[in-house]
Amino acid sequence: MLVLLFVLLLLWRRKKLKKLGDERLVRTQLVGYITGRSTFKFILLCTALLLIITGWANLQLGSKMDKVQKKGVDVVIALDVSKSMLATDIQPDRLTRAKQLVSRMLDKMENDRVALIIFAGRAYQQVPLTVDYGAMKMMLQTVRPDLVPMQGTAISEAIDQSLKAFSEKEKKYKSLIIISDGEDHDEQSLVKAKAAAETGVIIHTVGIGSPQGATLYDPDTKAVKLDEKGEPVITKLNEGELQSIAAAGHGTYTLMRNTDDVANKLADEIDGMEQRNLGAVVFTDYLDYFQYFLAIAFITLLLEWLLPGTSFKKKVKTA
Image (cartoon, rainbow, N blue to C red; front, top):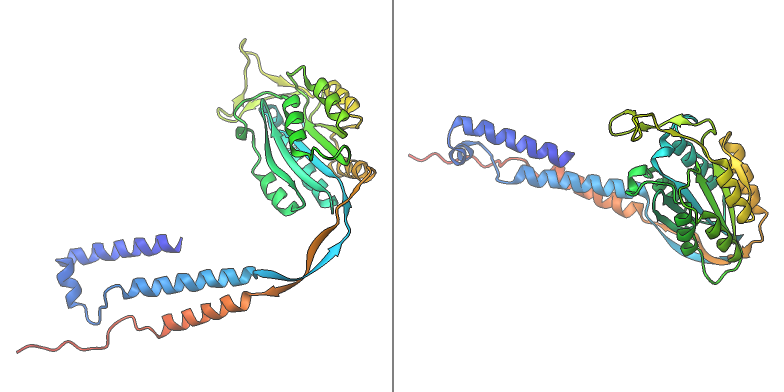
């Protein structure tokens, strides 16, 4: 923004000079004018600002490491991002409530590794297994239906993609949480769920929406979406599908009503699983480096302040 404003200032100044006459001639008549001095001082100010911001971020480097014992499981969250998730039968809409649920679950996790899969007609891994819950939340905010070009609700695709995210060496310590309205158009979902359970994956499902359904609005036209016959499209929660998948995966089905209650239930289910030892080496002491950036920023500001904007030499009059 600062660079843009400075460029606009330069253009405005050049326009004014052109009104006075030839630009080069006018510049030679300006008392104390130094070519490029204002630009150089601006670069110094921007550099100082960048250094101050970097120093404020307080970059750190680990200086001491200790071994700690952690126990947890691997959790893959498969989030339905089909356009039916934009229905408003639960407020503000199904997708927003689903993202709120995932965020609440992350708040309750400590040592578990979590991955995020988004799916509609196809499934894609958005975040690999990680314990960086902050990064997970940041990526969660960007999730929207247009990230998956093929529409639909292919839960079997989500199960396949989730299995790729898990470690193939482990035959347990794995949980898959599917959050969807269950409008599945794929007959392979139950088959895939049973196959996943045989590899040690416990599948929990969460139903988002209402069995009564709601009209679906098209975000592009901002009007009610119509089918081929011109009738309003009604999207309904298919609890039977999600219950069958959960039963095949030896897990539980939960209807989304209260976000905290569902998050607590899922957290309890995960905590009740057999957990593996995730012993790791972590940094317990850090060295701060903010002072170096602030010191250089101070020197840069001081240089900018001491550097004159104009020349003090007087022009010598010729006889």
